[in-house]
Length: 93
Image 1: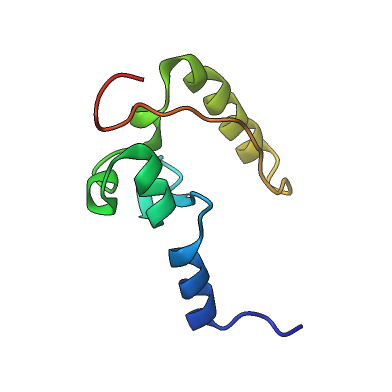
Image 2: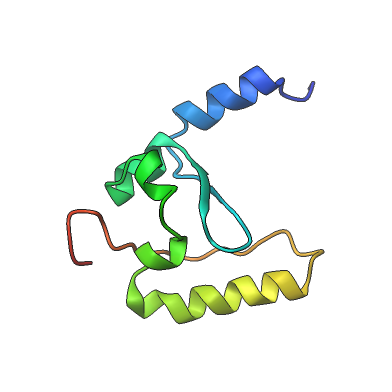
């Protein structure tokens, strides 16, 4: 199978029902797809003004920060997975 073209990658990013966000090392949102915007209630332009830490459920923040620290400590790691809760734009978690 051939690798995806940039155009195909962009198409799948946009139509995916899987929420995806690209964040900077400081936690700022760089890019979010429609599914991510839908579950948080924020437009992508609004998310770009925030950091993921600001919309993470308070009870999940410590574990999420620990996972990020472990990921940074082991650059060969391919990532981490967790069930994540958010503080939606509409109000309290």
